Length: 478
Ligand code: PFF
Figure 1 (cartoon, rainbow, N blue to C red):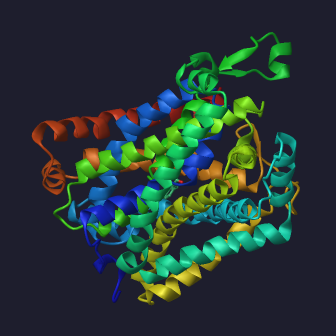
Figure 2 (figure 1 turned 120 degrees about the vertical axis):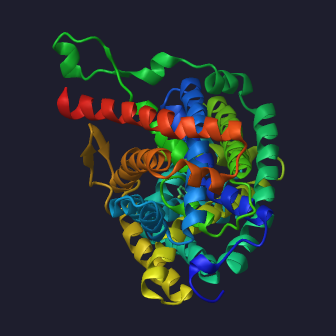
């Protein structure tokens, strides 16, 4: 691909949809969603998550795709240009900055977990899981993430694959990687859901994922001191709701400039509204299927639903170790999880790359390598913060949570930068871009446009503002 990134375009609508679904479907769906749902109490978390996906996330997808397509530049360049066209403050380009910097932070830890999937693919292929029980599965995982050499190698191997594809450009790299592999991932997930359904505790899973208990979502246990001071045992808290909001953004690849960058490779004939609904539907379907594949095993083996980031790595190997052709299915599953992670990580490297490319005029390969290696180095801190690895003793307190380095990066991006970035994007398209320009860009039917406009003007900023405001109030004012 010659020239700057903004001149490249998808070869077809199908290629774009696959790339965007590839970006959306990733570790967020299969690794993160199940453990967040587990920690957030199950059904109520799933329900608010889905509400956020459809009423806030999908309209935001439309907004970001249209901003990218209109700007035809990196997120920073596009925001600057559109603000200028609309005669609005150049400060709006901060939305682009937050996206590019956020994407850089996220890819630095995303590639660590991506590395875990590669390592687990190798373990599955070597038959490591044959006949293992829950305890061995747990020890295997903790042993692996605590190993400074193995985690470093897998992290950089994953980053190298990402760099390789990004360096090849949109049609040569991105498209080729996604169009075959996404459908394959879908197929293997279906097989796993069926297997888990027959062998694990499916009834309990359905109850857990779909029977909402709002008390669990909205009330947190109070601290021992507060209870001693005469306060009730639980207190009202929107922390988990914020987590669900952040997760809906993360899962749809919003507010990190990825979707905006992919929008910049769009041609004018693609229908953004329809595409956004397809992307959101596919993304949610995969998240729910991941839950349906994982929780039957978690319940059948008495694992902890709130087991955190190791959940998928500690639960599924038990199933693979017992099922017929487990070596094949296990290798396929972790292989495809790695693929899902790669198609997302390329979209995370893309915003910083497109910006630096635009700014420096360097060729794409040089930029991809520079940014990828830099993010990889920052990622070493995350890799070493896990298990009993070299930096695992470092804990940082954020809003009352004791977090390791990976947790801090996740918290900053997922719970702060992404919701705020989303809120300002909604305010920008809803209140600062001329209505007529928005209508022309989107080419929606009148009715659909009105619904979309209402959602981005009022619903998104208000919902995000309330959730965010309440957290700030609880932690800094009350
Ligand atoms: N959506 C991806 C996932 O769910 O794994 C992660 C992601 C990719 C988040 C790109 C944000 C982003 F910009």
